[in-house]
Image (spheres, one colour):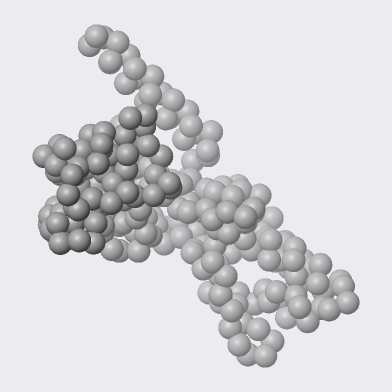
Length: 253
């Protein structure tokens, strides 16, 4: 049986960027191989945005809401658009309160009526927004923690659930550079070890979470073509890029 102390000792020996106190770690794609999928992601995204804007304009909308994208491989179309007023006819329905509208606009999506289904078919034919998986899967970060139990069974815990929120790995790009803000699985492992320690010291040690990890996730490291950086490093680069763009806008004014 793997004990919490053993797990914590291994976590303390991790590289600084993967230490369990960090909810996230940050990497930059620095090789042609690691940059290529991310460049393709942003190319597809730009193409989908251009098409959605053009479609919105031809249908009397002032803009569109970026669609929700999963972390799988499925690409999706824009579905919700901003209007100053609801068009007549049955082609559009209100999108609901979850969409934050600007003053003087409403959020609408194609209805389930025949006219709305025609709009949906048009949207499906447009270039789609790529899923985040295209940009981040090749990092190979740990997304699930699998363990074996004492009874021979197996358990799985998703990485990134804490503080009552879900944290997700996301791509970042600016100035022709590509980064990933990744959820640190070692943070979750440390929480599991702390929970197991409490139960093992209590009246019901059998309730302790198994720490028999399958695949040794603590040993995971980014492969070739990735370079670690800190959150402060990334924030500085973003601020530097924002300042550069502000200067260009001022010079063009």
